[in-house]
Image: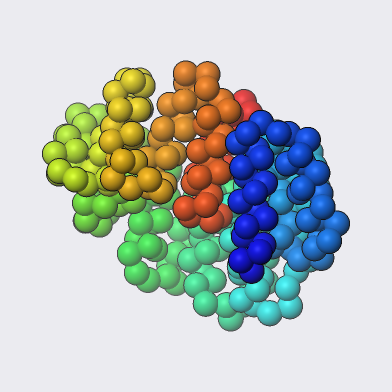
Amino acid sequence: MEDQGREFRRIAALIGAGDDQGSYRAVEAIVASRGDDPFILVKCAALLYTMDRWERGGELAARAKVMTPEDPEGRLQLAVALRGLGEHQGSVELLTGAEGARDRVLELARSLAAASRPEEALSALEEAEGDDAVMLRAECLSRLNRHDEAVAMARSLHDGGYRSGALLLECLLRGDRDREARSVAERSAKRKGDADGLALKCYIMRVRGRTAAAMNYANQALKLDSTHPGALWNLALCLLEKGRTAEAKLLAGAINDADPGSPLAMDVLRAARS
């Protein structure tokens, strides 16, 4: 397992060094030797997307999708991995057939929401409990323009952390409550030595078009926590605004290292492609 991780890190380093041919050959060597493992194929597809080899990456994702594990837990894990690649419909299909898997209902709702099916996600969440389910409910309500409900729900969950804070900002901004969103971000940024607070301030600065300020806050956050996914994501989007695509794509890889399967990494790569 350690050898496998080292191999993928070596490929990421080749990509970072601009060695497109070397990194591509290394990925294809892994596919040739271990292409019967759908999880390996998903990792290889993600690397190929980073190289802008979208067609080949899509082929590997499609191969992985049909290599369905027999056990429900395996199906769920593959579904989550595919969702991280942006294969939302394939993820929904796998989860629909993963009866008995732990957290199946929540993961199905996440995949439905990712597939822009918030009403179906809300319906699925009727059977789910816990803060993660409530956070997803708030997101879905916001996407359905039920802004007051979404904001109230998100506010009740906000614990000062980045994840709950970003949800609250998202709900406020969708509801055209920009002043409240700025207030939340300002209060967060005043917490000294807090990467989450700085990353939230970065988020609001980026959304408001203040790219240089956003990058400053992101870099401050990353000095405190070099693997902070929110700070990495916001900084990557700022770099894209500046036309610094190669650097942004490297940050997408860093997001994936810090939070494997995170949709934020694919978000950056797709934004870099457009």
